[in-house]
View 1: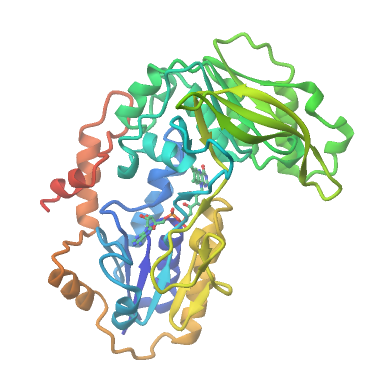
View 2: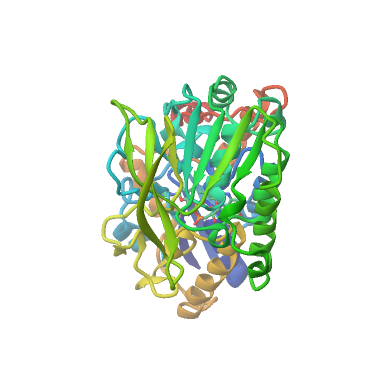
Length: 432
Ligand SMILES: Cc1cc2nc3c(=O)[nH]c(=O)nc-3n(C[C@H](O)[C@H](O)[C@H](O)COP(=O)(O)OP(=O)(O)OC[C@H]3O[C@@H](n4cnc5c(N)ncnc54)[C@H](O)[C@@H]3O)c2cc1C
């Protein structure tokens, strides 16, 4: 019997467990560890609460957790409660699927002023992440800005612009819904260093902006290259650019505006003790397609500034780390130690991109220790004994189901659940 530890219960962790279960049949036990008693990683804490159909992918993960060879061990932070060296003693292989939860820094003066937050913080706040329950984003001014030209920037701008009514059926947490409902923000500017042809926004997410109840997207027709130049674009991008071109024809006849500001590089954030404006330098594209500053600057008013420019992984002691992720070659870090998902590749791709990652690494593990080969490590029994010595009480999937049931039972009208936002609440629910 082989014992494998998958660290992290986001998409990458679940796909890896699914692949290992398939590769080994009944010949392996796979434990999915997570720092929290609730599984799913960014499916719970990242994917937008008004995108419930995407969050439904978790049903597939539940099936994996129900498989005979797979267990969930929650409330255990690797690197804090148990070390990598200890896990490698206890398990035949350890696969890190810890994601990339930290915002990349802007690296400009003023980014530490009150009012400036990272998208991981903002997104975590409205999705009920315990680390950000007390964020209290600055919603009292009329202008906000989101820095970045990917789907996370779109999520942030959309959530800032929706009405209470538009959150019906979402699982946005109550504290965020109430705060957003009372928000004074009327203009959200999305800043991108390059132009419409360089966006990383997908058509579905972009298209939603054209159908908001109280907000309209606004874009300068002059920011577009000639329409013929859309032709060679990859089809998804061409569709996105077509949507943006359509936005340029819309009437700004709703109370809120989402303004696309292209060729705009933030160079400083200024204000009297708090963010009040972003100083932006106009850019042009050079021959390689990079943005080059022109020296011409202007100001964008904003008392809330959300930077959505990418994420990095949390380092874990004794695991080589560079450039915001674990150093790995095709997922292999060191003997019996692997990485998958965002911890392996960095923060790019969709939920589904993590599936081939997980399967590829499971293949490597199976090649190194074929199904039927014998291991003599203790796996979960050894881990639980160690945790007990340390006074740490792990949770299992039944505990998670109890938490989910309790959250569903206290749902607000129009919401599938009211999530707990404190670790203590999760633990209390399951008698810890
Ligand atoms: C704001 C946002 C919105 C997104 N929206 C979409 C979308 O609409 N559609 C789409 O396809 N993709 C979307 N994505 C991308 C998608 O969420 C990622 O591709 C995916 O979650 C990455 O999976 P992962 O398993 O690598 O990491 P994660 O989902 O981050 O999972 C990592 C897990 O590891 C756990 N962990 C971390 N450190 C430790 C530790 N030391 N010990 C134990 N456990 C630990 C965490 O608690 C977490 O559960 C979005 C991403 C973001 C940030």
